[in-house]
Image (cartoon, rainbow, N blue to C red; front, top):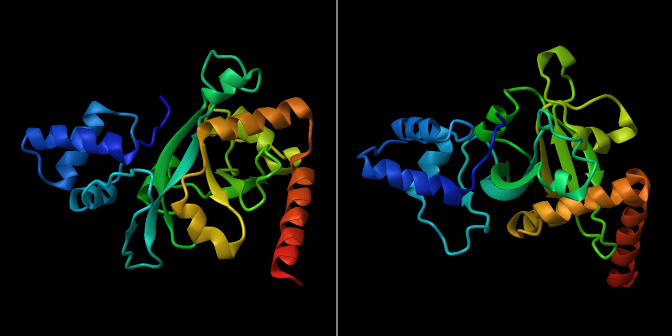
Amino acid sequence: MSAYIPSNTEVRALMLDALGEDIMDSVPMREYILSQRPTWVVSKKRIRRLLNTPPTPNTNEAQSTPDECGPNVVTADVLLVLPDQDGASNPLDSLSSLQDRVRATEIEVDGRGQLKGEDLRSIFHGKEIECIREMYDRRGTINEWYYAVFAVTRVKESETADRNSIATFLKKNGDGVVFGPAIVVRDGPEETRAERLADPGITADDFSRTVWWYVRSGRDISEVYGERELTRHLLGVFNSGA
């Protein structure tokens, strides 16, 4: 069974069920939620935060909470790229197969846009992750942000059978095979990171179609990245009047 990071809306729904069973505290509430949804990745810290934060009309909007250990923590829209499904065809064989392995969810990142949090450690079982690819969207008009893909890279094949063909295709230089899940976030220039975190402009469909475009077109991801970086720089110079 693949790990799944539920949205705040999904977690709140089961929290209400738990409250109906007179379960009031975060620890037993987490145990109740996991008993109902064993594949979910939900930390006690996240449940405590949801217990103390009323729902907002826009569930996609990033919400800040103090973090004693560093910058503010926000809940941002991210994508989870699941490993290949046992017995299924290669997810890169068709767009629909690719879309089936990409899920939209939420996860904690700090105010600088860096991945962090107990949920993240649970997804990757405490292993160190790194950025395996920075990739611009297939739409040539998008130059202000790009997808950043994170995964565990130092994994022996004997440790897991969950090959991730999508992440392996995206990995820089085609160096090695990626196993287990991958996380995708919006990234880009440091000065606009806060704006990107507040903008729910990353969707599973757009990402899937972008990967499919690279698969079908044969375009080199690094080459496209360089072209878009140059375009962004030139537009910045033009707009500044330099």
